[in-house]
Image (cartoon, rainbow, N blue to C red):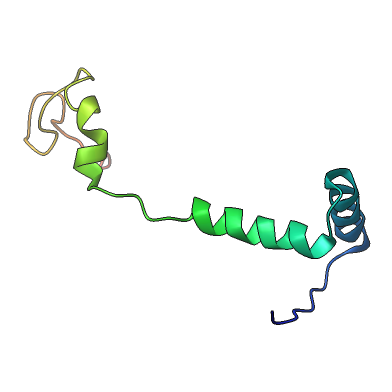
Amino acid sequence: MPTVTVKMSPAQHARLKRVAERRRTSQSEVLREAVDQLDQSNTPIEGSFVERAGHLIGSLDGPGDLSALSKEMKGYGESRHP
């Protein structure tokens, strides 16, 4: 297994030692587990945004198309100064 040198603050090192002692394992094992957990938490999310948010479509009230010029949008973006 390759050896890796890690620089950390004294506070981080104290936390690492405390976790290793509490789990009754080595500091190296704690770091390996942490890397494994980080790697698993960054797995890509499957499906498109629409597929994942599909249950929200139609759940809010409001105008359907804000790009259409309607009475609510009349004058929006126009200069207030003549």
